[in-house]
Length: 159
Image 1 (cartoon, rainbow, N blue to C red):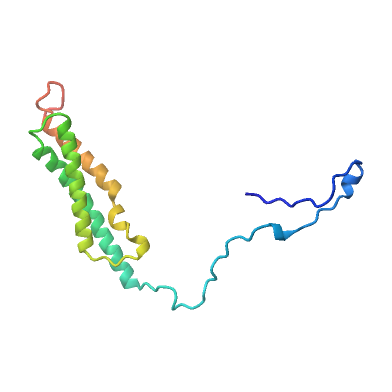
Image 2: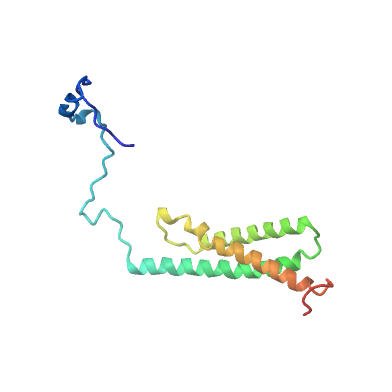
């Protein structure tokens, strides 16, 4: 919010007097803003992350990413095969439940990797490659379902 200076003089009646009006600054009415903590020059207070620890963390996050990408593609294809006997809406919800179960399994695997993440990056175990996982799972599921059922329809691609 913008803070405006308060006028401390009486309103003027004469139009010439308005130009002579003075504005008095009073800073005591303005509340203080939050004071930031001073940045200390002491390096012992700041956490030091070595290059080896950072590269190991990045390597494990990269491994988790590719694990989720590969399980998404495999899971989408497997969902087409194992839910073949289910018809209609139940097949869709069973496949989405299967997708969630595989993702929860990757979270357990990621926690087993014992990644040394700072407290601000703990959510990376869950959020790493979640978008890629969902879209690749759905894409591979739809493509594999389409390819397995094209021969049964009269209009489609014959393989």
